[in-house]
Length: 309
Ligand code: PMV
Image 1 (cartoon, helix red, strand yellow):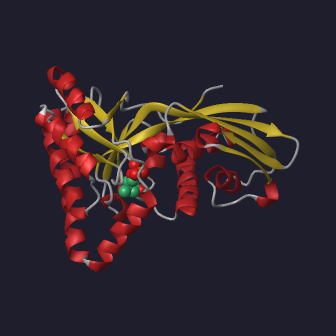
Image 2 (cartoon, rainbow, N blue to C red):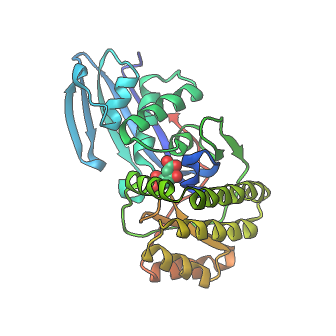
């Protein structure tokens, strides 16, 4: 199946534009970040899956015949139809609480370790299948970032389109609150049931901004991209997924001179992002920190999944 021991890594992600609408078939823009999740898979003689994932406090041993499709790594092994036992060890550059996509990155890195010759499209399909089985909801944007890397326009059931997005002047602030993505996505689904036209209009509006943002991002027009972030954020506020803390951090960033800012991901916590001119960078990071945010050392546009050794 694979060499005796393989180590792979996959990047975390940040959603730049289009969250929530992407679950309903609209496009989003996601960037892979330089904080990575590492998986080492060692072939075992015994038919067991042993997991040591200290970052998420999982240490387990399960017979191959007894794997759970409720657990990301075990479900990935099931979907790979592995016939050998394997010892899986994970190591992360980032805490799982940040919302950088540790589950999807770990699934992608593990699938790559179990079948390092797999091509990216097959890898993405298997990873997305695994994530959907465990989580029940999701657009697959996080698996796309982990597999392909770079900055992507991603629409469900469509091959992602890579954007040239070098030199993106991004600042990322963590709100200190871990968001429960699946619950928030389900809450939005309930709102959509109740008010299909209103929520549909919001998603269409977001999709229009994603279209405009993909042009401005590839042109490197960060000032205009920042304005679009503001507009996109207004829609997310209308959807009811922002929080006081995120609002404080976003308005602090803007008062300090950011070109634009928004929440990133499902909302309810996790991170906010801002686009900022070089000469305003210090003022904006200070303002976000004063509003109670933790500045994250994150570079966008990182490489997708890779074999380390
Ligand atoms: O909370 P995150 O960073 O995993 O982002 C979720 C983004 C959603 O669009 C709300 C859900 C999805 O799977 O696309």
